[in-house]
Length: 398
Image 1 (cartoon, rainbow, N blue to C red):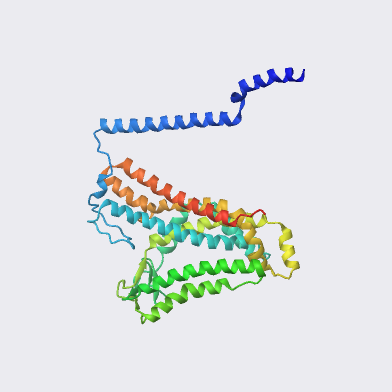
Image 2 (cartoon, helix red, strand yellow):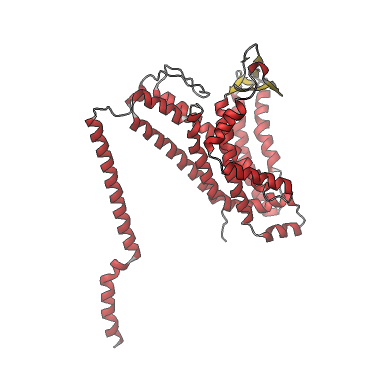
């Protein structure tokens, strides 16, 4: 009797299993969404091509080989003139965007960690100063912060004749920051090889020190060793070659500074604004990550005799990093995309250079497509690196 009751139920369930199977329905929904997106994309492309043909507008990226005909104020990496092509101009804009993004991310991370830890300080004055910093910058649009640095700070600096003299033959005025420029002689390339060897040596030393500490509990001075490798090996390479390195110092003239290297006020304004603005958000992420670490961890380290500084550096922050890294990635992406605000102060980033090309050629679709591809690529690369770093910091279950 039992077998007679089970058989029809099994047959009925086999007939309707696909309709009520969540996995099967998931595949169906995904297929429908993919087809819908593909259809929408096809309609957009077909409609765009039809409109361009109707308006008799040329399409394609062949215009990138044409002569640009405009100058770019800041091109530190590529030799660029008005006779260069549009493609070279775009490369200048891309490299300028990368420069702002990289140095801004590093500076914002350092400031953000300092402010975030300062907000948890037992010192009342430090805690309140950090709180005011966070609340001020988080509630001001980034464009206003850029204008503050550009119009309210750097533009009111003295003129070139009254430049502010800084140590090591450096000067600061409303035209930017001037500093000695290194001039490399024959054989100076060996210093670059020494730097690469120092970085590789630092990597292997850190791995060896970590394994040694896990096995014996003894710490190794990784920081000082890494500093010695990264700085000492290039200096040793220069010493072997007889120090083929000199400096071109800026000289204060009657109306301007001659020689040396210069960082313009546009770059400084954008760099400082994005760094200080993003640091306020990073500070809150750091504070939340530290708060997410159990209080018992600090109490246990204090019971072992560790003071507040080593406790924060060796116990709390390493555990908080697992909470900090995911939202930190979003702030890095925001800083990179906010660099497009450089067009407001005339810094030649990708958007500013691309906008000039668009106005001259009228190739709006192509230029906007380049914008999308470049920013998408930067975002994906940043996300991949941060995901790898997050996996390295994740807890490993035993």
